Amino acid sequence: MSAPATQIQVEETKAVLAARAAITRQRRGLRALLPFLGPAFIAAVAYIDPGNYATNIQSGSEFGYKLLWVVVLANLMAMLIQNMSAKLGIATGQNLPELCRKYFPKWLSYTMWGFSEVAAMATDIAEFLGATIGLNLLLHIPMLIGTLITGIATYLILMLDRFGFRPLEKFISALVIVIALCYLVETFLSKPSWGLVAYHSVVPWMGNSSAVLLAVGVIGATVMPHVVYLHSSLTKDRIVPRDDTEKKRIFGFSTKEVIIAMTLAGLINLAMMYMAASVFNAHGQTQIADIQTAYKTLTPLLGSASAGVFLVSLLSSGLSSSAVGTMAGQVIMQGFVGFTIPLWLRRVLTMLPTVIIVALGINATETLVISQVILSLVLPMPVIALIYFTRRRELMGVLTNKRLVTVSASACAVIIVVLNLLLIYQTFGGPMPS
Image (tube, rainbow, N blue to C red):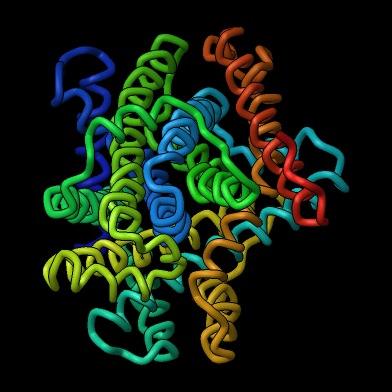
């Protein structure tokens, strides 16, 4: 056996042994949680991808603090849904697409696969464009060349998986922390009104048809279909439970990780929107509808340091979320239809729409917002499938949903469907209901 392979085995064994020690309560406190950190942070990347930048900046600049409640609602929904996805993998040893292929009619499984691939493509457009814009504004690299650099960089990030699950988890988690630190700096510089932040985070408001479109976009950018599928794959065989007691304890650690990772993602999303509200809306800049304008407007208002920090966070977001999107694409294809394509080929195929958009000079941020609306339209399918499986005792055993969880998740699905119906109605010329 080669030295690198031996080293990988050693690292994997260390992580598994540490997890086993936590399960048997030989490790306690933070040391017990550490071996389980990783899957939710990978999923959290999708909740702070460049699509969030586009929708949150546009919402904050146009409506100030008034749509912060949508971010809070979307994040609570995300926390519940991702926890259920993680639980599905732990309880069944299978991921959500695999279960769909096993239990649903073939026509339904293939239909879900088709829509999921569209969602994955829309996701990748947002992530690729975000990283490309970041490279263009930060390093003045032409957009077309930036897409190629982004593709190569994300492929190299994915190659970390050859060294076991921990290096990839650690690298992506580090990028999440970089984004969080960037927005901590932005918060300090932008000086938001904390009273308005607190009030509008809990008091709903939906003023006009434009607000509806942005609210759907925020939910589409926050609760992501592809990581609903991916999270169940990340937990299904990471630490394999040997009995029902171990299932419960692994799920307990997983729940704590989901709460930490999703809370961090939620705070970053709130920071994106209240930064736009306190800097752009407060200065009469209510039409900041693209990332390039946001960057150029930040410079005179808060200085070049703030604009630079903004771009570093955007670049970190684009690179990490693009890597996660490719991982999800592989899981979706393998689960639903039972085959995969080489990673490099998927990377090339998912790059093509972005390359075409950049080559044709289509507005990048408008494309980002539209991609998030597409994601929101696709989202009900994996959420409904997830609820269906996690409430089945013959599949989930001791981790079957409690009634409150199923009711809460069903309410999330209803909210998503109602908002989507409103969006479709409005798109075809219907007046905004009062």
